[in-house]
Image (cartoon, helix red, strand yellow):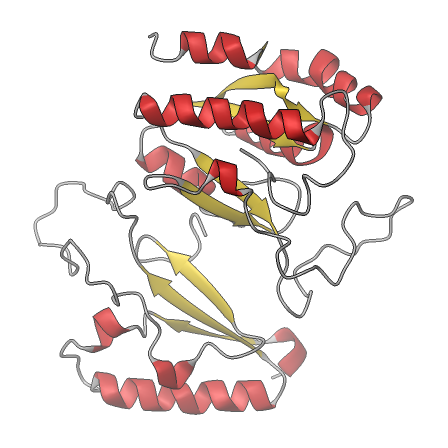
Length: 288
């Protein structure tokens, strides 16, 4: 095996699961042998992926279809249910994937985080964008609607950042400061919010966003954030192709230039959704 192109994926070796009786190998033996494998992979410079399963606090992302046999997990889950057993890590260089069903592939306001809102934006200032996004989020929470806070960051080794040759420099330079991915405190997160971490412009690819929305029966997405023609537009195009209905809060988003913002608002967004103001959206919230 080539260590550079091989990954060890360890499934559900977490506190809430290894306590069970297993066969033909005891969970203790499984953990010990998985540790041996993980140590060997790390020593060889190969990737170790630790996968764990859990559910959101409101249990809305757990599958609940009628079945003949009871699910192997009962709720509410204990606080340490999803903790990886300490012998396995995670250690520097490991990836931790959180899933919400048996399989690890299906499913694992935009970029209003401390270091992004410090940029110059147009035609709306980042301060105005944050204030209007807060108004939207407060109204959504009051109405009992879901608020999703999306942030972008990269792994410590920078291996998950796209690095294809381009004519223009990326809007993010590395290494990232420690607080780069922190959501601005005015926006939360608060109880009931979802936080999605992405590793490129769009918020769907490689995240659990689609899973979380579909399991909650969400059909309409209201988009806000920075930057209009990067994170917002990439996410919007992907959402439209997944058949979500879209509403764009025009004055709760901004680009790195007025021209870029206006092109998306005037040319792209009207073809895939509805462009409205923050006030119009909050006024319509709750209407069928």
